[in-house]
Amino acid sequence: MKDVSAVQGTEIESYYGSIVELTGHRKRSVIFWIVLGACLVGLAVALNIGWLVANWRSGVLLALGVFAGLLLVAGLVLNTVFLVREIRRNEKHDAFINAVTHELKTPVASLKLYLETLQSRDLDEASQREFYEIMLSDMNRLQGTIEQVLLAGAAGSRPKSQRVPVDVPALVRECADRLRRSYDLPQDALRVRNDVPKEETAVVLGNGDELRAAVSNLIDNSVKYSGDRARVWIDIAKTGASTVSISIRDNGIGIDRDELKRVFRRFYRIQGALTAKGTGLGLFIVRSVAKKHGGRVFGESEGKGRGCTFTIELPLVARA
Image (cartoon, rainbow, N blue to C red):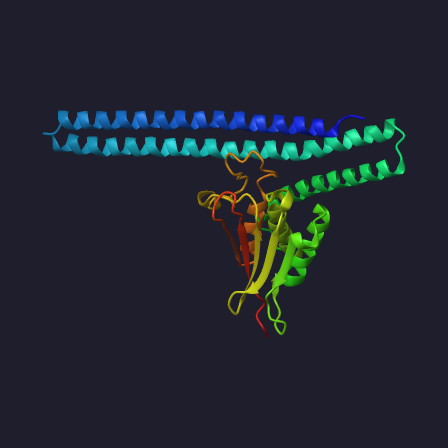
């Protein structure tokens, strides 16, 4: 039987190697255009100063020179900023394509190897059952990647969707139970605590599938980036009379505070995090869903190695 782990390891090594090479090339391009822009601005300033010195006695020529010089400098600065932004945007798109390619190629390669093994060898029932479970897991991974891309496209276009009352505690428990089964986690590894008083309700008006995707993305990230001993705590509480919050805290790798400002951008992946998984769309989808439902999402972390807390706040249905 072919060694699936070895093949997947080679795929991952190749993927991260291409990411490192691409990032290095993009950084050199950015540095080149910044240096070139700075040199051109310096040259324009020098020429303007020379013009002023040569024509300081002529008021008309002096004013014309100052105006033209400022216009030239402003144009060069704007052009440099535009080029750098385009390079970085292209870098994000390339990283996204590489990430999606990896997320699609790896489970497909795994499925192919297991199917070839089942076709070419007579395996006992236990081995067949194990293979089927792994193949089902790969299929779920493929489906998850496709859903992420589709949800990101829908979030960007902001189509109108049917709004219905959604019970937040029930939705959160459903997402937590599904991911607990998916990752085969013990009961105490993923805990849900509902702090909403029993005599009150926590119902929001929205699209259940979108809210389910947002909550699942946050829980999934917490589990993936917490290593083998994942511990995730989910707290549901009312924050004021008209808002409910869902806080998801983990004991994972943590995020630098500077990175927290950027993790919700489309395609953004933490710099230097070669262990990062996914497409870079999860948190963008979470933010888009929260905004579409009139709420917000924010992250907190004390730094690398100290875990993260992500919180979604949503407006409650007004009482009649």
